[in-house]
Every structure is written in C-alpha cells, then in structure tokens.
Image (cartoon, rainbow, N blue to C red; front, side, top):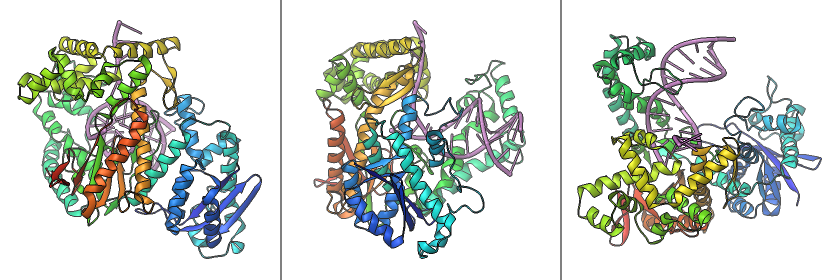
Amino acid sequence: MDYIAIDTETHLIEPGNLAPKLVCMSECVGVKTKLYGYDDALERFYELIQDQYIVGHNIAYDLAVMCNEVDGFLPLVFKAYDEGRIWDTMIHEKLRMISLGYSRFNPQTGRPPRYTLESLVETYLDESIEGKHGEDAWRLRYAELDNIPTERWPNAAKRYALLDAEYTYRVFLLQRCNEFPTLRDQFKAAWGLHLMSCWGIATDKEAVSGLETRLHQSVDAVIEDLKSDNIIRSTGSKNLSVIRELVTTSYGGSPPMTAKGSVSTAASVLKDSGNPLLEKLASVSADQKLLNTYVPLLQKPTVNPRFNVLVASGRTSSSNPNIQNQPRKGGVRECFVPRPGNYFIACDYHVAELCSLAQVLLDQFGMSKMAEALQAGRELHLETAAGIMACSYEEAVRLHEAGDKEAKEARQLAKMLNFGLPGGISSRTFVDFARGYGVEITEERAQMLKQAWLSRYPEINLYFEAVGIRCAEEGGSFFAVHPSTGFERGGVGFCDGCNHYFQHLTAAGAKEAVYQVAKACWVPGGKLEGCKPVAFIHDEIILEAPKENASDLAKIVEEIMIETMQKFLPDIPVKADAALMERWYKGAEPVTKDGRLIPWSP
DNA sequence: ACGCGATGCGCC
DNA sequence: AAAGGGCGCATCGCGT
C-alpha cells in the first residue's frame, strides 16, 4: 500500500481551541505534491480517509482539524485507525529514541531529543527546512490566506505548505522499514488523548476564586513575617543561602544533604529543624505550591491539557496543565467540574500495577503466588498483611473486619510494601519511602517487612535476580524487550528495569482503553454516545456523562476498560470501579441507590 | 534578558 | 551487593 503524507495549515491555535479552522491541506506521495484550498481539501480528505493510508507529523492534530470541519469525518478517522491506515512520524521517532535509550538524553546531540518535523528532517535527511523561520515565514500566517484561492497565494506560502507534506513523506520513507511492535497502538492512543485535549475540562470559577482567597490568607501573612528575618527577600523570593545556613546550624553542623551535596531545604527538613522560623516556612510550603503551581492554570473557564502519548516506560505524560498531577488535597481537584447537565464518571483500575506485575511473574516463571492470590479473588493488601502477621489470609480478613488494630496497621504497611518494593528498593530506602506516607519505621523493621513480603511472593526474588543479571551482563544497563507487547526500551538499569515490565504493561492496557472509550463516546451510535472523555491519569479515565443515564454509562465504561485491560492480563482477573461525581473528588467511590449509581460526595 | 542545572514537590 | 520508576512545573542562583 502507498501512504500519502498530508499536512494542514490552519488558523492559529488559541487557548481553548486545539483544532482551529482549516485553511489548506497539502499532500505528498512519491515525488508528487499537491495543495488543496479549503473546499478541495475537505473533498480530498473525504476521499483519503475512507480507505487510503495516511501519514502525518503529529497527525492527530490534522485529523482533529478535519473532524472539526465536517461532523461525518470522525467515525471515518476511527475506522482508519482501526484498520491501521494511520502513521505518525513524530510518534515513530519517539519509539526509536526510547528503544535506543535516548528518550531523556541523546548522546549524539548532547541534548534531550526534539520531535519537531524540522528536527526529524535534520536527523533523517540532513537538510534544514527553508522558510520555517524569519520575517517572511508563512508558518503562522495562513489565516491571512483564508478564503483566497490558492492560485492567488504568494509562492512562498504555497511552497511552505507543500514542503511540510513532502518532508513528512521523505522522513516516513526512511521510517517505514523500521516497524515497532506497539506503533499502531501508540497512534491510536494519541488520537484518543488528543480528542480529550480538544474537548477540555471545565473549571468552576467560584471554586477557583475561593481556593485562591483561602490560600492567600494562609500564606501571605507568614511570608510577610519572614521578610524581617531575611528568609524571604523584599521581592518575595526565598533567600536560599540564608535558609541553608539556618538549616546547617539547626542540625548542629551536619544537616541533611541533597543528592549533589548541597544543604537540603526540603519542607520536611525545615519542619524537623527545631528552628521556629524554618518551621513556619515549612508550614506554608504546601499551600505555596498550590498557589504558585496549580491555581494559575485554573483561570480559564475551560482548560485543555495536552498529552504526550509516549514516555520511556510507555506511559503518557501531560502538560498545560498537567492533569495527571493535580493535588489530591487542598481543593484543587474540586475546581474541575463537568459541563452543565453532566456528571463526571471516574473509573479506575483496582491495583493495576500489581495485577500487571502478577501477570509478568506468571509469564516469566510459570507460577506466581501474587497471581494466585488475585485469581482467588483475594484483596492483595490483606494478602500481604497476612504475610506480615504470619497468619492465613482468612485470619487477616477476620481480624481486619473485626477492627483489630494490628491488622489495620499491617494492611497500611502492606500497601506501602506492595507499592514500593516491586521497584526493587532496598530496605534502607523503604524507610524513607514509608516516611513519605507518614510512617516511621526502623531499618531493622524494614528488613523484616521486606523479607516477609518476599516470602509471601517468592517468585519476586527470581524477578529481581533476572533483572540484576541482565544489568550485570550488559554493563549496568540493558535493552529491554517487553515479553508481551514487544515494546523496546534501551538503557534500562536495575530499578527502572524492575519497574519497567509491569508499569509498561499497565500503561499499554490503559492506553488501549483510552482509545476504546474515546471511540465509544465519539462515534455516533457508540455505546457511550453523549459522553466525553476529559482526563486520563495512568490507570483512570474521567468522562462527562449526561446525568439522566450516567449510571448505565458508568457501567459501560467499566466494561470497556475491563475488557480491554483483560487482553493484556489474560490470567489475572481485572477489576475497575466507576463512580459518579458532581466535581472532581479524589477517593470517590461507587454509591448505589435503588440499584443505580448516584454521585459520591465527601 | 534568557538559558540551564539543581532542587523540591505534585501525581500514579 | 545494592538499586523506585515514570513524569511536569516553579523557583533559585549562576552564567552568558
């Protein structure tokens, strides 16, 4: 089959509109290029999207632009993705960089990799795109040519529009001989995620201003006060050299240090310093973080988080705002609301990464106690807690249900063990890890707990050993090929290696679920018609759903997510729970009344 | 003025 | 033998 490269030129992307109005489309196949004005572009795209193979650089953008012009295009785009007829040169390059181990740093350029078409043209073709920058660059000026027949366009404008399609095609020719196993899945996930970005997520103006006021009340007086002690400058910035000196003296000359050897100024260090001024500063640090990092991004009626479909482990990331790290405490999440007439459906996988780990262990060693526990329908944290208390699972359940204090503590520790230890941490590090959860344990206790955990799931010893051997054999880091997805990742060390196999598998399943859910929402007649996905947070999808049938729709979201993940975890029972909410709450749980889901509230 | 490394911290 | 991983973003301080 012949791929055809396309590229659109559009009005400028503006806040709240990630799919702006189309101006023209260019295409390239072989050595032929062609430019289509608005009407011709729509007609030509309609032809192409039915059954042709299409390649683009960040193609989800162009496809969304097209779908924004003509309603009927959307189902055709999903069909094209389903038939494997879409190729994205940007995503291919990301897979290539990850496979080489260069995703964070490319030793050939001495920098983090860049994924613009321009930079791909440099690496693949050793050419530079002319007319991209400079005063007469048309790149950002195509709105001026809207409604003008292309015949009357300046030559430079025509040339630039054609060049992008041509370069995309030439890069593609060099990429296509190098297929990656998850390539098509990445393309599909990117489309699902881009639709989320375009739709955006609404904010509640009153909630935002209320939050802002409250945080200012908490922070401002303290900051003002600390100015007199030179801890805060008159400009409002922190004076770190003064703070570090105070930390040093407070800790009797041997203060906690950072990785690179400077005096730590972390809030926890300040809090335990015994110095009232530092303690005061620490007391507002969380609120300051909220005020400076999160509140400013909430100032629009709708925000449009961007998603990066692919980071090293196969996970996604998000920015502007990063919808994947919104604080659980402090009222930030509660500023996000569904549009009028809707509830949020929030559906997340139950212990997703542990299920993936169990599947990986089972595949690798032919047996897994962790898998057996999950297959038996056991609650995994209580299973681990039973290991800590050296009793049977049934006994742990009985004690826990009876409100036994020891059992409750054991389960809390169990959660930390289950979450922390699969990443290969030492018992020493586990002490710090537990402290992050507000639990103080000695290193001896950590050692005992780790041993108990490994005894409960002995196959994990083999898992760590196997990763360790790969590291040792290949000089500290190795090339990981995921046994079930085929995903390739270079430069993997011990800890990231331990993490990689299960984190990747969860990501792969959840991303496929993003696509399936998006399809069910956006394609007319789909099972989730009327719903709109608004956020994806690694193992959780949040959607808007019309209130009237939100309960039924929530069940369908569960079904789709479970069915999809189940394909990646064939031997582990997958669970996912959907809850309804009137705004985004952390910890919302399914609440049922008369057999139907109703919104959870705190 | 801007770039950059280090630090710290939010999430899963 | 030992080893949390994956991110994005704000701030500070230093350098060009």
